[in-house]
Image (cartoon, rainbow, N blue to C red; front, side, top):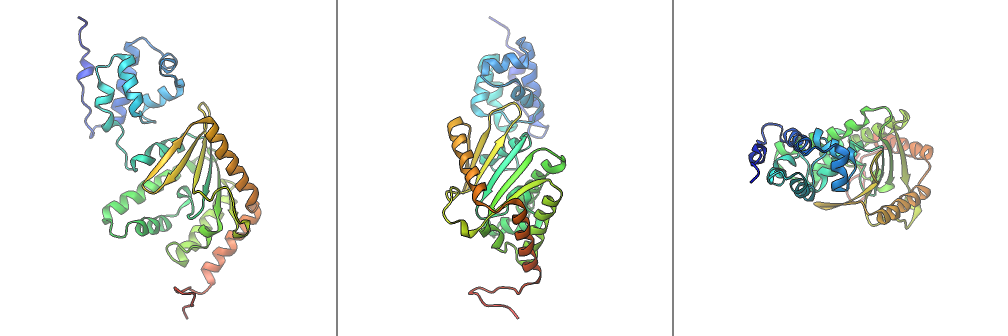
Length: 292
């Protein structure tokens, strides 16, 4: 009988960088099996770049992938046993993989019918959204969610990657999330990113009428070495889509939205005008009245 590998009895300690430990174990088991990253990728029907990202801790291992790793590498159940610790994240489970994909994309195209996209939100705007969604949430949890949301915007630290293109419904521009001052600052932030040539931004006006984005928000992500993916958000849930035909159909819907939206320059003029209204216009009361 073959001697049991000492590594198969390991248990990750969540306090000791479990993602890094998980990746290190994957690298150890792969090398012990005499496999290159490309060779392991072939056995799992994935690209070598994904294996490299899992070993470096950049990507979480999916549950079905953990089972395959244990089987292919004869790892004694290590990867399934420690999967929960290695997948720990400050983000909701249904969204955590999307955050990791955002950091790995070459391009993001996003449609939002009701809100300024999360990657573009200011701290005050994001706080208002979090509080509106859960008014009685403990302050510590609010701060945790706020920090997790803001850290995603670090993908814009690069001057060129990813290419980010957002189409937003006029409703998202007109709704004063957080109040007049917060909304003015939010639109000025978006305008500043446009002026820096860091994002492409279009507004879909009310006058567009019926359009292909009426089912809800959509995010399309492109990658250098992997097939494109789509993400369809929902209340307390979300779905990652990698089926080529479905992604192609969703890409067409996005293209149609872009064709119906205001051109980028007109969109910039529009949001700056609305920001001006928020900054200098009268406060609006419920029922359509105005504050003195």
